[in-house]
Image (cartoon, rainbow, N blue to C red; front, side, top):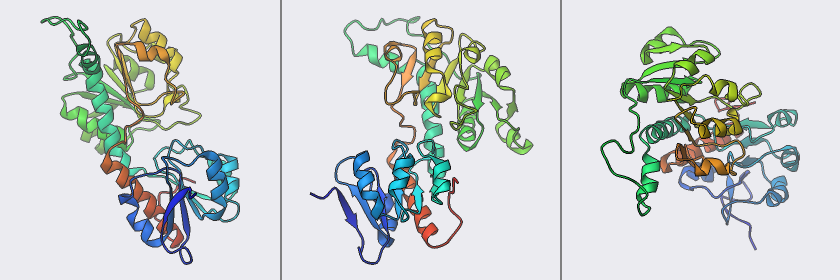
Length: 330
């Protein structure tokens, strides 16, 4: 039985293996130039990838598929490019790919607006207790109505601290500014003055930002330096009325420390799209009313998925055409 569906002329075109059955619209240009193999089911298993990869020139994993030494070795001498379907690439052993002379690319541009949109949606939901009230309204006698019941917080006039003021952070800043919020941010280096002025943003050291902010939103990549960037000591600096938003990567936050702080009501709420041990979610988080949870779907729009596929396709096509204007990671 066939494990995958393909397109293209098998004799003339290079071969691309896609780990997951994705929307085909965004891959239309790639399918004109290459033979592209998608799984017939939702995903290829790890063992299937190991068996298939030796006969492919390019591999497209999603950010959920771990590309380790064994997977890279399975490509033998034929695999030339790993075109990651996602902006984050901590799912790939970049150092080993370098040693094997395999190019790794990602898809940064298409994720900017949907991720910022998700962060803003989570922020509103946490501040106004949208998810909690929706959940309780569905239960018999689950919610008490009244003028002073179910009170949330307004975001208008509040301070948002953006940790990682890259393109996603700036996109969120634009939304927050339109909502009447004050912007403070932390980067390892300050932004140029014209960009700060555009968002009316003030740079702060991280500890000062945590103390000053009513909302803290995380937009940093997962690196050795950002692992557990937010832990018990950092959380202790936040206001008891503050909200923590994480749409970056789960391990940026020490999840056990966050659970304790939320249980003790030492911050107002958290809204999370990512988790330290995902897809496993801490059971205590699932029971808390002051937590809004999303299934790592910050980029999960039809438009974004097709745009990501187009950029993956562009990276592969340009690479094999000898061009250098691609989203190179290594």
